[in-house]
Image (cartoon, rainbow, N blue to C red; front, side, top):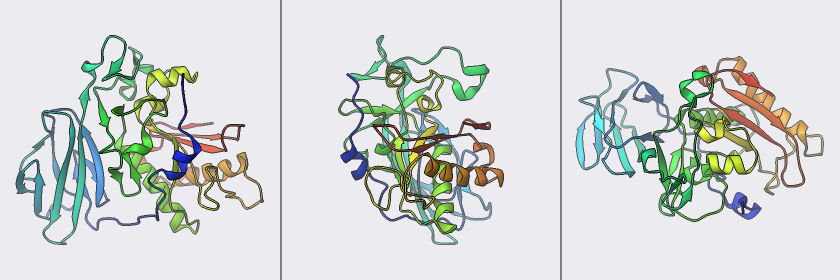
Length: 306
């Protein structure tokens, strides 16, 4: 039996507190990806090396990670050998800024059993051949293990790990994939809404990661970006906070036109080049008897609209 997380959980979901607008004056760069936020998350395989430095090369600072302290940029760091969450702390000596990177060491996909389960949690199987031969559709190398203890961990200033778990039934541990590019895109959208006179506390993640098992059970296409951790179905729910999209266009009704308003806002950002290589997909969905309207966003790396 497939069960979708109920309304009460959506209303209580982390990420609906007041919008956090904080950004670093000097972004951190991890493996060539600039990170402008004082808290973020990355996802690495056991023993994987990664590089940390500042976007401004003349900046110096200190890193504290896995019981070791060293200078920023002195040498690559190495993810722990065992899956789990490790805190990476970075201090900019010149500016005095500090940042926390939550490093999730992944559970290798090789640990899936013959049925496609990890620790009793159904994940299913990925298509053997990537769509059109694209790397973005390769089967994942590993999964984040989500527990009751780490589900509330921030993966960016305004989003938490537990918001992105597959909506299938089952207790902890759960497993997911989450792409850093998706979080950067969602934070960008949230910031622009607030900066352009459309204040909102947050974006509700109606659907984030989907296991292939769950994705198939709900009848979705096998190459959905949701199963690769690079998509989110979102809506704004501030006034009133009732588990459905707000009346964004001000016409006194909540329907597909409100999803279209949000999609047009995001598409205008895309046209201005604000997403760079994360231009991705954008879809508009109206209401059904089970849920309100919403917008799909993803980071597939190419333009798609529906």
